[in-house]
Length: 499
Image (tube, rainbow, N blue to C red; front, side, top):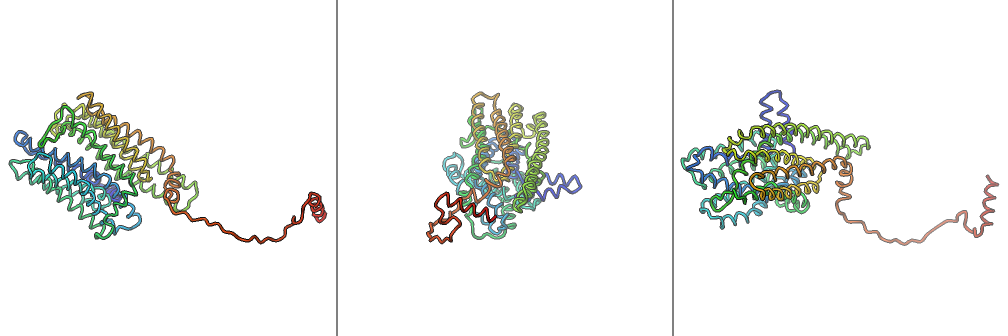
C-alpha cells in the first residue's frame, strides 16, 4: 500500500525546490486528506462571515461536522483498516480485478454501520428538518471519504488526488461567497456539494485504477472474520482518537449549540491545530521512511523465500532494524523542530484560527502529546509490515484506555489541567509501542519462521493415521538358535579364529 510513497519519492528526487515542495503537499493530502478538508471547511465560514451575524450558524455547522466526523471515524475504522489489508493481499497476489468490488462492498457495509446513528440524529436532534437531512448527507459523505482514504495510497495520480480536495474546497468557498447571510443548512449544503465532488473524483480514480465492479462485493465480511484482531484494533484506535473530545464535551466550560448538541470549541480547536503540526512529519514518513522500510523488508522476506543461509538472513534482519532507526531518527528530529516552534509561538497559530489566548496552556500540552501520538502511530505502521496485528491491538487498547482514564482525571482536576490527559496518554502509548517494537525487531526471525508460518499458525486438517496389520517375513540371523552364554562364547571364539 506504499505505492504513492514511491511515486512521491521519485518526484522529490528531482533537483528543484518546487519538486520537494510539491511532493510534500501531495504527501500531506495522501496521508491526511479527510482531516485537512474537514478542518479547512470548518474554518472557512468563521473567516468569511461576521461573528455577530453568522456566529450561531457557524457554531451549529461546526458542531454537526464534529459529530459526523467523530462517529463515522470510530465506526468505520474496522472497515477501512480491514479493507486496507484485503487490498494489499490482492495486490501482492496480482488479483487487482476484484479490488474495485471490495471497495464498493466496504462502502455499502459502512453505510449499514452508520445508518443507526443517522436514524437517531434524524428523529431525535431538535433541528429543522432541512438541517437534519443535510446533516445525514454529510455523515454519509464523510463515511465514504474514510473508506476511500486507505485506497489513496495505491493511487499514483497524486496530482489528481490533490486536485480533488482542492476542487471540493474551492466549490465550498464559491458557494459561501455567493451568500450574504447563511444558516446552518446553507453551510451544510455547501459542504455536501464540495465533499460530494471530492468523493466522486476519488471513487472514480479507484474504479479507474482497478477496473470494473464484478463479484466478491462482500468479500470484506470474510475479511472481518479472518482479521478480527485488525478490525478490533481499528475500532479501538478510532475511539481512542475521539474519547478525550467526547469527555471534554461534558466539561463545565462546554457549549451547547443548536439541537442541544454539546462541544468544547477551545479544546476541539487546539487539538485539531496540534494534529496539523504532525502532518508534515507523517508525510515525510510516507515518502522517505516507509519506502525505505518497504525495500529492506522485501529483501528480508525474499532471502527467506530463496532459502538463503542463516548469515544472509541475519544480515537482512539487521538491515531492517538499522533502516528503521535511521529513518525514525530523521522523522523524529523533523517533528521535534515543528513541536518546539509550535510551543514557542502558540499565539501565532491560535490567532490564525481565531482562538483566544486562554487556550495557550492547553495547546502546548496537546502539541507535545500529538508528537508522541504520531510516534506511536508510525510504530504501528512498522509493526504491520511484520503482520503483528495482536501487538498493534495492544497498543491501540493502551491508547484508548490511557486517554480515557487520564482525560477523565484531568477533567476532575479543573481547567488548569485540560490537555494534560491527552499529553500523558500520548507518552504512555509511545513508550508501550516502542518497547513492543524493539522486542519485535529482536524477534524478527521468530516472527518470520514461527508466528507468520501458515503451517504453524493456521489450522489444517490432519491426516488420519490408520493401523495396518501385516505378516512379518524374516530370514535367519547369526544368533538364531543361540540359547546359552556358552553357545554365544563359542561363536565369538570361532569368529576370532577366522579373523
